[in-house]
Length: 114
Image (cartoon, rainbow, N blue to C red; front, top):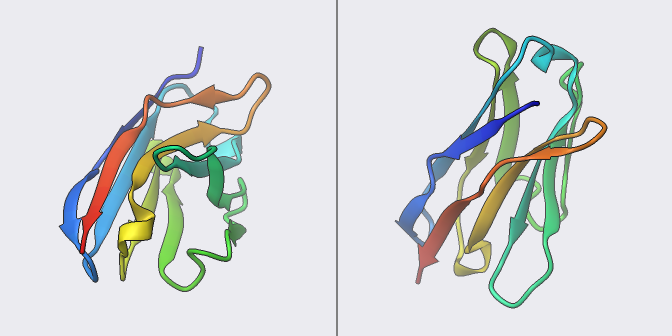
């Protein structure tokens, strides 16, 4: 069973930056498409960024130009670099391995103060 552990969340002021990490267990990581989703209070979970096994990236319009997803296959880790954060980015951020069945992490809280 694939396990994912997110880290790097925290409290940051508006305009600041954070980098989230997601460590993934197993030997097949390099073959997985990976994604980051987020869920703000009272809202549904929404797609944030994705990266294919070939490192092709996609982003939600709301984060395009501010967030960067990347992966390090040698470390079985996917990252989300978040810049120019706003209070609207406050959410729990989840990492997901887009395999069958999907594997989700436990989430990491990001809070952006104004």
